[in-house]
Length: 141
Image (cartoon, rainbow, N blue to C red; front, side, top):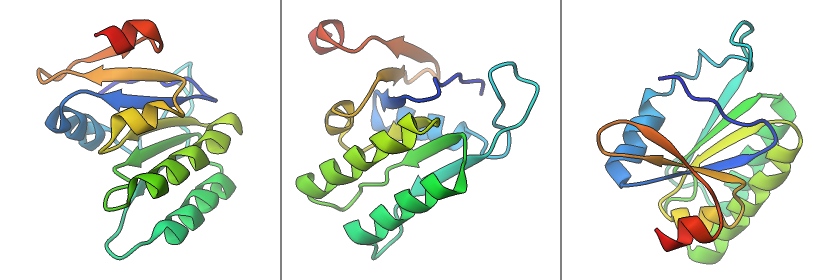
């Protein structure tokens, strides 16, 4: 699956759960490429593990920031947390992106993820992706 993500931005994946899951599963952590498509770049995937609390997950975000991956895939990283904790983790992704990474977020609460997003992609059940503008147009759909 080819996907271009803007560096410095948080992009939220929207659409039905199953479609979002298929997109995240299809993304190959070993095939990240620069914008020209010639050089490979590091990809890091953040996913929640059983028993991790918000502090453990914040440490994981800090570790990703220190590792220097160009692409960060955030795969249901806030699962099992209360709303305030989800918002705290999602907000912690903003500095990761602004430090020069492309961040793609699939979250159980995509509306909460939109609060930190610069852009959105809609995963449709047929397998395609559609860029969604943020703002009034998205909220009206």
